[in-house]
Image 1: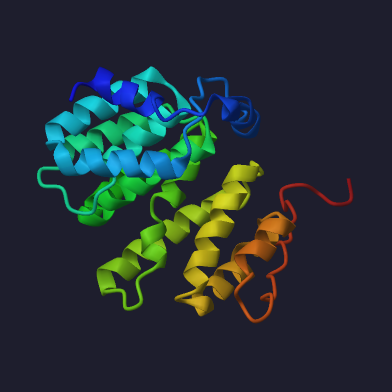
Image 2: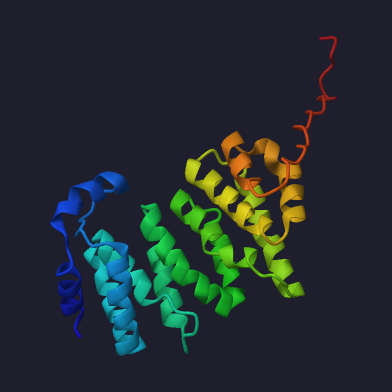
Length: 246
């Protein structure tokens, strides 16, 4: 199957009556085909089963470049797989896509593909950490969304706990960022972690919650029995180089 045929097959599923509604919902200026996510799931599952990795990479890159909403989601789903031998080309393509993020739905599907590559090789967290300082808030956001698997282990090994603490350090740096999607990503990460380690989430909120937006703090603590007490804002020390009597 050629990339062009893959795009044609995707377009054949379109319901044009949905296009205007989808464009209004996602609020990003790009082409919308009118294909529902379950349909994209079904067609890309078939592609993953019948195509080589090289073919999938070629089609994924083509669909991403086409820049339709559904094409980009299908591109991400083509590469969403737990075990991939020689997966470095997949990781490299995902890293390239991250720099072009401009919408949450597409970013989340790419994050799902990327999370598999991170759990396959946690040393890639070194690169993800560079995203936490990016000017593009979509890039900063994906550092937490892509590392959500570190919230879900029931019996984490020492290395996983160390990695979890590293990611919580990124979240702590994010709490003063007033961008809604960043606050949401912190709350999401903490809420998911609270299912496995509520004490650690309570500790985080106590230490850093005062800097979070109230709604984000409430969402982060949603599964905790009570809202943790917050440490107060630190009081600035007086400047002793200035004579207070002047």
